[in-house]
Length: 201
Ligand SMILES: C[S@@+](CC[C@H](N)C(=O)[O-])C[C@H]1O[C@@H](n2cnc3c(N)ncnc32)[C@H](O)[C@@H]1O
Image 1: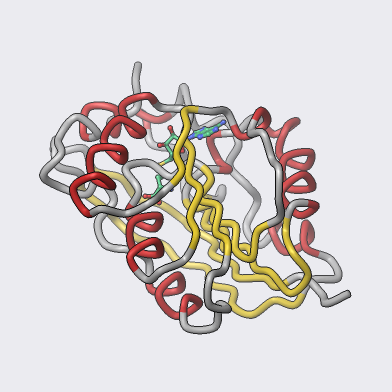
Image 2 (image 1 turned 180 degrees about the vertical axis):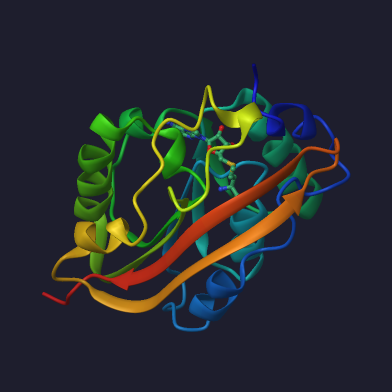
């Protein structure tokens, strides 16, 4: 079964996952002018569009063709120079480092045996004093029935912190919430959010 967002990405009038997250808006105030941002699994681009609108240099990719088609449409509408591609995270062609990498709601869709390698790859392509913002679902709530085929990589509660040994934890949050999507699908999720900063050189 295809995840619910594939259908929602076809609707160009409405952001599938709502407004940019608060921690992204707060962090944007600390980023240097002209900072480079990578939005991994960007969906229809709520964070990419917001940060490009503030003048940051944004690259964004997603494995979903529908997501990138919608983001390409929206970036043209808003006249924003976001570089986009349809890509799996393990195949993204890195050519320079980033000051912020966003992994919002993505890691739980990546198989457990690939997660360490992917996080380490993203850490390597992060500039000194650059940030990661990660939001992921944990096992503190069962996987919703309609996402069982794709949500094969839920984390243990608090586990994400161990991946960032040596980085400064600027924010950590653990919470549960209910959401309802446009097509009437309802979920209860347990989420960990972390904002971490790489040490300087
Ligand atoms: C829940 S959505 C979140 C979208 C966006 N990050 C946001 O916060 O609005 C998860 C997204 O991750 C993408 N995704 C899942 N696995 C991926 C992978 N291996 N590489 C790139 N994107 C992936 C999905 O296609 C989907 O668009």
